[in-house]
Length: 250
Ligand SMILES: NC(=O)c1ccc[n+]([C@@H]2O[C@H](COP(=O)([O-])OP(=O)(O)OC[C@H]3O[C@@H](n4cnc5c(N)ncnc54)[C@H](OP(=O)(O)O)[C@@H]3O)[C@@H](O)[C@H]2O)c1
Image 1 (cartoon, rainbow, N blue to C red):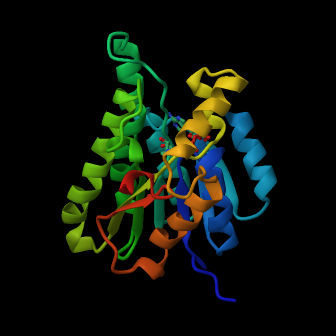
Image 2 (image 1 turned 60 degrees about the vertical axis):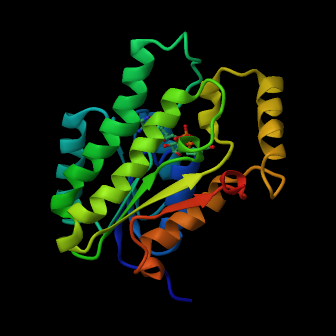
């Protein structure tokens, strides 16, 4: 059977966990050579060991521009170009209006917005005509959840970037699309500060609002990212692809 990403070189930021890890597994299975990043070396090593071949981990923080320069220098030296960028690294913690701190705002925007912007901008010199960029947004930009306003605002910015960057990259024929996962339990949910019971309640309450009656899995998001990364989506540009069981569509 033919592979959808045969011979492609890809970058997945935040590829050591959750949606990024599931996508990296799919990318490699579809024939890509994948660079993954994350801040924690141990998690990166574990992901690389689990996947085995055609994956390399480079420790770097998307909000640190010197780290991004080092990352792209390594990719250039090892592969010379990048066909696919999945700008996935992101964080989100609950903080209700009234208790939002400058630190919370800066951290969330620095990683989810500044980090994503410079991940893409600094990748451009390595990207050939016909390359694909996928930005990880979220249903959170259009569906409210108590205490997640700063996170939702970062994801609205991400969605806007996809629209504008299709125009900025028009001459280079590089496609830019956003993917918006719905509720998809991952290790990222540990950041919420819930105990086991609270985590279960959160997931169950979310599932009630999802037409399919359940939350998603990282692999279900990964399959949609493969679509946006591959030639199957060759005329798809600037969209927000919701993968949410219908939650944000009702
Ligand atoms: N899960 C959901 O329900 C859901 C829904 C909508 C959108 N999303 C989005 O999906 C993306 C992935 O989330 P996830 O749920 O898969 O979370 P996750 O399991 O916590 O994975 C996040 C990944 O990003 C990395 N990361 C975080 N901050 C980083 C930074 N500053 N620089 C580089 N890497 C960084 C993490 O590694 P280190 O911690 O080691 O850096 C990890 O590999 C995020 O953008 C999130 O907003 C998730």
